[in-house]
Structures are given as C-alpha cells and as structure tokens.
Length: 396
Image 1: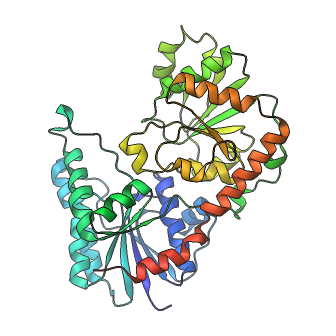
Image 2: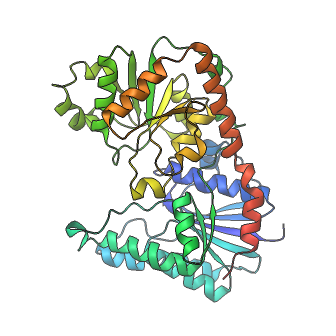
Image 3: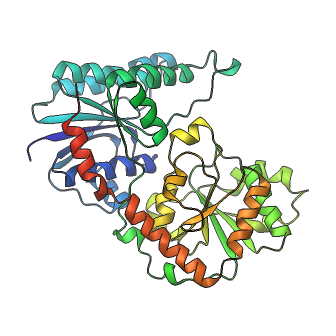
C-alpha cells in the first residue's frame, strides 16, 4: 500500500445513512484502486459499514472519532466559523507523509477553510466531495440568513480555490471546471452484486395493480402536484397506489388534507411506511412496479443526484421520472423507465397511465433493462481507475 486517503465525514453515519453510503462506496472504489483509507466520522464504525454497504473493511481501512463537538451552545454564526477547527488540529497531529490526499465531504464554509489551511501546511492536496447545492436563490428572506451566505462562500469562493472536486452531478462538475478547478463526476454508487440488491424473483414478477414507491427525503418535493397526478390517473381507471418510505401519516397529513375534497379516495391511494432503517430499505422496495423521482428543473435538483435512482435500478424497478439534472443520462425513456412529459399533475398522470398499459412481457423487459443499467452506470468498481487517476493528479 503505497499511499492513503484521509476521508473527513462531518456528519453522523447513524442519522445520515445516504451520505454515509456515498463516502463508503467511494472509499471502496479507492480501496480497489490500491489506496489505504482513514475515515474521520462523528458516529460510525465498521458495523455501520457492514450494515449500510455490506462491506467488511480490510485492515488498510481505519475509522477515527471526529474531535468536533457534536453540540455547541455558541450562536450559529460562531459555530459555522469555528466548524472544522478541531478537525484541522487533528490533521496537523497526524503523520501525513503517506497521504495522497484528504477528502472532505460537504463541510460548512468554516470547516472547509480550516481543513484547507491544514492541508496546505502539510502540502497534501484537499479534495472536496460535493454532493449538493441546496440553498435557494437570493431574495428578501435570505438577506440575513447565515446558512445562505455560508453556502455561497463555500460553493462560489472556497471550493474553486481548493481546486479538486468530486462532484455528484454534471451541473457541479461543469460549474467548477469552468472556474478552472479539476472536477470528476461521480454519481451515487452501489454494489449491485451485494446481497442487499438481490433481484432474482423481482425480475420475474408481474403485477395486477401498480405499486408505486417514493423513498427517502420528501421535504423539498412538490407532493401536492405528485398526489394530484396520482389522483388524476386513478380517476381515469388506473389501479395505482403510492407508498412513502421515510414519511409517516402525520408527516403527510398537511399535504393530503387540502386535497381530500378534490381527490375523494386519496387516503386509500397513499400508504406511509414511516421511517425505515437504511439497511432495510431494499427489502421494502422489492415488489414495486416503479419508483418515482419527480423533481423540478431547479438548482438544487440539477446540482444533486437522487440516491434512490441507483437503488431502484439495482432492484430492477423502473423509474417514473421528470428529466431534471442528470436523470436523462442514466434513465432512457421507454427502456429503464417512463419520462414525465411535463412538470405537472397532468404530465405525471400521463406517465402513470403509460406505465399501466405495459404488458407483462414489456414490464419484464423494462425491469431487466433497469437492472442492467445499474450494473453499467453505478457499480463502484467502474470508478476505481478514474478515482486513482484523479487522486494521482490532485494538486495542493
């Protein structure tokens, strides 16, 4: 093992399993590329890695406890400025003579700045793993929003100066490339050969009705339009039901209540499965007719990439999707999924109706194509050589 990567993860594996999966699968690709790994995490260890990504890390992979305080009584602005200070001190105490690079996942501006300075002092390249750009556009509400300005400072000033970025989307990779940084696009990765994503029975399944699933975070999604589209399809005779994995009935009540007068059978059309442990999500998804990804063409949607897409495809689940961001790069209309023609209830209804007209043979072919697409695009092994070349060329 000639060199190693230090991966800084300023979040809890337990409370942010999708973030944990990203850094663990990128780590697996780096391990396959011949690098040793040291993870610095708030909460998380080998057992978490085994549960989240079905991986028993080799001895070249070590986990360290993050020295950053988990809770602080300081005002938010001060916390943001001081974030990463303990991490930078930890880095300065480490022997980094074998370190090829330090990777930081989505830190705050202060966190990123302090780590960047520590890396410059050690003459070790800093690589930023950039997986989101969530803050809304500037307006009256954001004028005194510290999180908004923290995001702008990080994304527009510190990231380009750091110069090395692993980006989850084409939007981010192109943005930083235009600013002169080195950027490598690495989408959400999985291990399709893992027991978590076994699909033998799934690819042979036929459905008497459509079981649609929506998994993961729902807070930024336009659920009113989504549910109106579902109700419209049902009013036209489509037997479809939508299950939410990650939301409770109480979570959805504020969205459903105003729609009940317009969609009389809405409660029968929606099921909320509640919050589900990340390692249990695959078995809850199995048997679904299609997964829904219904995001507008906004910056947060274009800059990110839904973690649910590789999961759906790996399980042979076709995707009903509105083609925002990079979705159309990975899901081909009529092959691995059905594209929603316009971002509206009518557009979603048309896509659901189109899915309902597929024969058993056509649905089976779409399931097999979805599984094949996951193997072609999201297997972490595909990125080992690219990550090796990128890390080798990282500049400090």
